[in-house]
Image 1: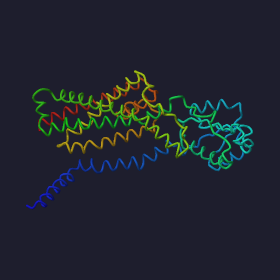
Image 2 (image 1 turned 30 degrees about the vertical axis):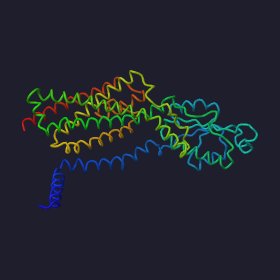
Image 3 (image 1 turned 90 degrees about the horizontal axis):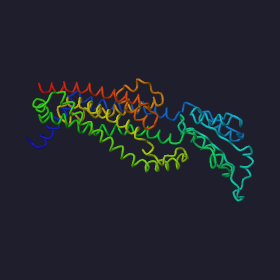
Image 4 (image 1 turned 180 degrees about the horizontal axis):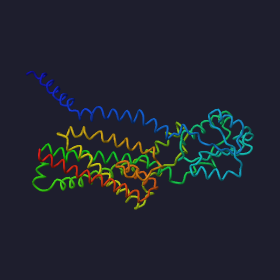
Length: 404
């Protein structure tokens, strides 16, 4: 048979094996495409709208607002709510508690001073104080719009005033924006690192040994199926945990550089250079108790991930097939992580009983330093109980393999 015919025959055989295996077609072609469409076509736009808060117009309080600026802001879709000096402290407290978004304070003679200001006089330019809370819903969108409109007015009168030079600023508690950023970023990355570490090791430990015929030999010769399942899950969980910790270390080392670049981009493109101070971002603000709870959640999550992957891998005939069967699980886990955004700050007790979802939520709580120890223990217990039930199912599959 000519060499070309052999190549085509072999290629046809591989394609036939793939397309006539329903599990592989669904796992490799249908399932990833459907989930990615769901995430990027439906869920991602909803998340962006939710985080930007486009549908919720913030309350913008103003003290001594000049008519020209109020008219300009109104044309930009920003309506000012007038207050007097006696209400100032009350409004500031509301903003600090994330109940309202902005307070803008003008000097009583702002227009006159701005129109007559001369830089050569040596006096300071008239100043606007803008107070806000960077953790409030839709903050970035509305802050950027307000700064842009005030900047446009400033340019129209030849740069005759300043914003937040000696007052104003973010009323969010110190450290909260940084912790909020970590809570949004790190749980997803930790899950990905642990999953990849668990996938490589677990498929080899089960499917690889199954291909070589050593899995059933080990079962028959030395231990029962439950012992074999538990031993492998324990060892592989430690490997997965180490992968997660290694990835976390890499992120923490890279975050300051990333934040510097991100801050520069905001400053140059959106005028948000003062939005969030993240220069000292890291794990230095977390104590031993915080890190201990984090280790507990990571350990229970690693055991659960390994068990889930093992249940899929042991049913595959080859390592290649196992990789195809297991890969869609990562998309599912990422989807769960994104769904978690919708429930941030309004978690119910039963949410901590949902495997994987509770891991992402618990890690976010820890990085935000807003966790309840009882809820973290509940989440870890739920993960470990699910992993134990998975081990029982895994032992059954191992026993079935030995009898087949």
